[in-house]
Image 1 (cartoon, rainbow, N blue to C red):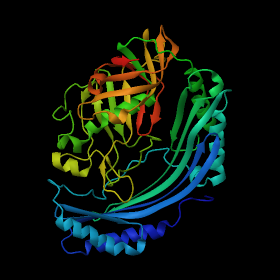
Image 2: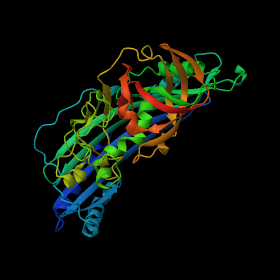
Image 3: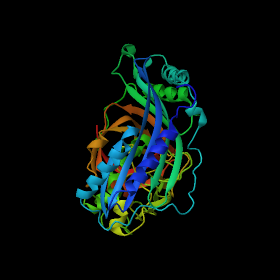
Image 4: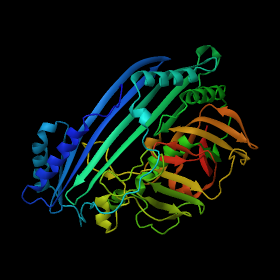
Length: 455
């Protein structure tokens, strides 16, 4: 991956223009959209202290969305010589699919787009394979910084992508972005004389400034602090502190799906009909910001070409808005919130959070110091089993500790947390200042009034 890792753009963009022109030449087509993508990525895997694999990949192609009346057809290809066939396939599907309800149309090319800062780092696009190997070595060496602790698995991934969206309403927008992700898991050696303890750490960034060695150091330190845990803790209702990783685990799995307007409209959300009602503690705020500087999902526009914006979801505990893409916004006769996102060029848009930011009026410098008694959980296992409609969850707390009189005390060997995410939001009464970006959720440690714990 020497030199700029994006190349061949003009061929892809030309194919996108051909696709749009061909779309509008088909009888009966009312609107057309072409989503073009070119991205390259490098991934280095770590297994048992060794750098095991290094992979470099490029993905490029176009996705074509055609509307005949309000019926949509979609087709995609990474064979740029088959643009015409792709367009005609989308048109055939539009002719047989059910119409969108109250479709209000694709966005126009009018108006100016705000540009978030910190979403592109030239050093990532120019990084060599050797540079990526060096990052992975720093990550591994940090994980091995404490005697008796070794890394078991990990990875470093960097990517650069360019995308262009064209449509028949005059829209022609372009975005370039980079991203870096690092993950490392550690375990105690067998000769430590106790049940092995494990822990992991991670980092997300749009630039290459991450301290890879520090991420490894933190994983090793948490593994070390988790040794010789106790199981002698009574079950019951207990205050729980959740580190950012744990917050993102449970909020992302059990709550965020209920904010999708598509789920609300299909009866798959307990929040249906609750706009304007109090659903969280009075100091709790949640904002989705597609323009967050350095945000992992920040861009001038979403994957439908809708201008990105900052949308209040919960303010002062009151539910203010759901998240909309163009289709769900048409159903409710509102504007899209800029939450139409795709996994790649071969998928149609779906409602997805951009950068979901959690905060609270009661924010303290040191949440641990403010806690008389409770348990602390760094991450959760099993969040994917949560029920996003009812909000019920039962998960295992990983790297959990007893907190007493403002200090972190003994680690807990095994701990289950059980509750309901909608009730949990009502009992988040305080947050720390340790804000972290965990994918598309940006959150500090939070204090939950009470959850059921089972040791």
